[in-house]
Amino acid sequence: MKHSFTLESTFALPRAFLLFLYLLLYVGALAQELDIQAQKVFADEKKGITIATGKVKMVKGEDKLNADEVRIYVNKARKPLKFEAIGNVDFLLLTQDGRRLKGKSDTLIYLVDANEYQLIGRAQVQEIGKPNFLRGEKITLNNDNNFANVESSSSAPVRVIIDLNDMQSNPQNSSQNNPKNKQPESKSRQVDSILDPKPESKELESTPLDSSE
Image (cartoon, rainbow, N blue to C red):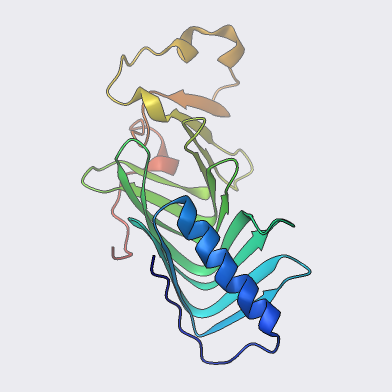
């Protein structure tokens, strides 16, 4: 199993270096390999955090991420709990059902146990090969629960929840007939398929991302 990372400076504490290597091996054992490249890497074993800064690039399988800084949080057993990418974030993700998504945001948080991505600040997601597009101040994608949630920062926010399993299915999905799902107009809505916005939704207007793959 191969793991690579680039450093411009050395660690002050050997234990921090060992913690970082352990982290790479642990994550790589979970799914393929984790490749991290950065100008600087700092690990604090007591706080359970590893910080990579400076043109950070992360690759795991077919997932790729670029950012100014990436923070990796682990528990006492050194199991990764959360990944946080900060500044000029852009990414490529392969979903469990085989779709490829590219996007960008100011911050991206990945919660390992929940298998959930949170895109915060000028967030955009585009499904590659299709016109499907999401944009909002915050986008949440959860693979285990199969939904996407988009929020706006306006005074009357639009909140869109999309069933990831409902692509190309019956457009009259059950949520439309469930009284519990009826919300005040323009406050919340259920969409029939993932990344398949309704024409009248300005918040999900389909336009290409300007970030490269």
